[in-house]
Image (cartoon, rainbow, N blue to C red; front, side):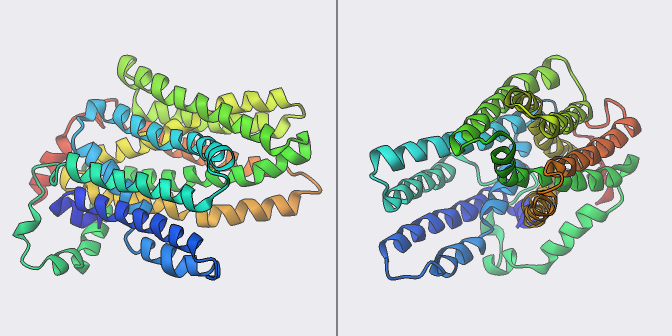
Amino acid sequence: MGSWSDRRGRKLPLLIGLTGKLYFSAMIVVNTLKTDWPVEYIIYTASAPSAMTGADVAIFAAAYAYLCDVSSPRHRTTRVTIMEVCYLATMPTGVALGSFLFNKVLNKSYTIMFVINTILMALSVIYTLIRLDWQSNEHQRPLSEAKNIFLDFFDYNHVVATVKTITKKRRNNRRTYLYCLIIMMSIYVFQRDEREVMYMYCQLVFNWTLGQFSNFRTFQSALQDAVLLIAMPLMSGLLGWRDTAIAMLGAAAHATARIFYSAANVAYVFYIGGVFASFGPIVAPVIRSMVSKIVSNSEKGKAFSVLSVADNAVPVISGVCYGALYKSTLSSHPSAIFYLTMGTQIGVFMLVLYIHIKTDSREFEGDEVEAESAQQT
């Protein structure tokens, strides 16, 4: 899908992914109405068909590629960060609003809750259809030029082209930097599944209730959104920091937060860790921005599809790792879960430090990669 979007545009893959999510929400409504259906039917009627559209992977790959297409290298990091804020901010606000509606307004009706979600997904599809351009850069051609739309999309050459994009030699050691960035994304998102066991840890150490833990998560989420909205434009735009320096700050902040988490025996120390952790999410948008500056416009879809796989596939492994580690150390040293996170973020720091040392401040500026691509073709 990423390779195809480089040829035909980002809009259709985005619409396909959004339509898959719309279908999922609508079928959940149907499942709530069919009280005689077993819960396993959700997999067959909602989850599996939605997954066939690419769902989240397609949405994020297409959205970030589209944004990078229409943004200059100078403003790209800031704009990708704003998109990251829009994505992250909906989690705590959506949970809080959903909880209020479910308990106070809708009389705990799952059906109405998912009807609302279906309506919102339909609005996103309509907005995308009306507002976004079918082609977002000069390399993309209209779908009408395809001889066979089905074969144009389901072409094994798309897979070959994606592999070639990732593995081909690039000037100034850029292929190595691209590998590093993909690995960085994989090990950075590893920490997202920490939150599942963090609640159990806080219950054990601080005797927190679900409400108290939710208050902590709300505090951290609000602070991280403020950091992304205020600190990122300040560091990237006004102060002119290199992307690598910003990423190192984020990785170091994540690792430092885990020192406070693991050492805390009172709640306020844990909250201090939350302050440091709020700077951590600046890493992901910087990685995406740097990847977009390494590849040409005609390669962005392929690169972002691989990056989206790295982003979405790793939690399958990380959730198991955190759960197994917490169970095995529960009676002896339950804070070991934070050491795992610390290790992954140190890995991110070391990789971005390598890129920082090997490049100068002009390495990821401008669109000189287009000239390189033209020379190779």
